[in-house]
Image 1: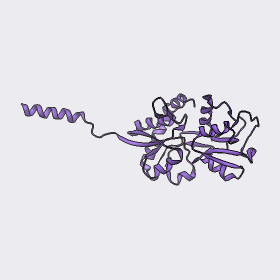
Image 2: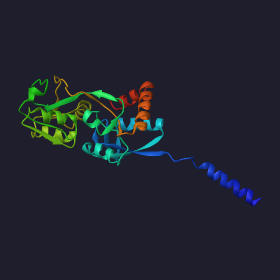
Image 3: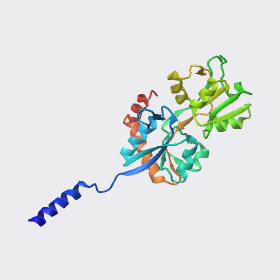
Amino acid sequence: MKIKTALLSLALVLGAIPAHAEDVYKVGSTPTGVPFTFLDAKTNTIQGVMVDLIEEVGKDVGFKPEIQAMPFSTLVPALSSGKIDIIAAAMSATPERGKVVDFTNDVYSYGEGLVVPASDDTEYKNFEDMKGKRIGAQIGTNYYNVLDGSGLFEEVRAYDALPDILSDISNGRVAAGVGDYPILGYLLSQGKYPKVKLVKSYVPSVEGSINIAVKKGNTELQEKINKSLAAIKEDGRLDKILKKWGL
């Protein structure tokens, strides 16, 4: 009788243990890409559109995302070296990046925004209109590469984060800055940079889309995420996430 009871107890214990633990994927995100990814001071965690999205993808595909905060310029190297498994940030699928990582289908498309001092009433429409000025962009972005390679400017200053650009515009260190339009719009809407404004007349020339990235050659994961993204778009989950963050 004691043996039967012991065996029953063992069976109950084993039955309570899942057949396999849920896979955990390390996901690289930036703490300065609000509203796509940003550090929430209240919870000390990375939050935003791409965090909500990768959590939905994880539910579909069958993994738990472990969000890791890192500077934008280190995301691709971290993925290539295996320090992280996925990039979920405000990153676009440029041809240059596509040589070293594999991107999913588009998540959200937009162009760059131009920010200048609030006192500057010039109706800039393109980069040529700002020829000879000192301008800033985030290092590691396609915007910086395009500006730096144009030969139009006195200096293209590199920054780690967009808030640093806005601060330098406020203090007169640079005449303008370029970055993701939705992020710049969100930052300025918070009222922390009253001396800076978005140029309404400006027409974006470096349009792109946000994409999730996986390690080069990981076709299986890429296809699984693409399948999930299609479902998330179809059933309205993506629209719900975008609306939550004001996009």
